[in-house]
Image (cartoon, rainbow, N blue to C red):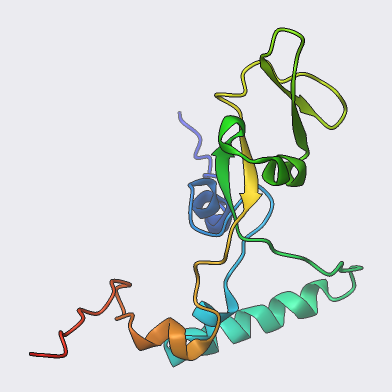
Length: 150
């Protein structure tokens, strides 16, 4: 006789966020405000309800203020000195004339050609609601531009 064992409850959000998606990292989900405000009204209403419940449930926590910096992954060897410093690395020339990459702690990076780090970039997401929707149809492809002489 086989006993029925119910499957454990699955959490849909961790399952969804396990795959790479824009604006997600191991610990955070970032939603550009301009894009959230550009969503269709039914979506905005649903999100407002969910966020209201979320903030009510976790209002008791000591929330820090978050600073979100648009970034991209780059190999160490492709960075200039300012970008290296921002990422916490430095480069020097050793006695043999070779470039040596190091962490701020002084630890040598053995494979800088393969080491990727996050460096800040200009934000590619439009900053205000008008620009976010003006030339972007619902599917996210730029609207075709009509030549002025046509």
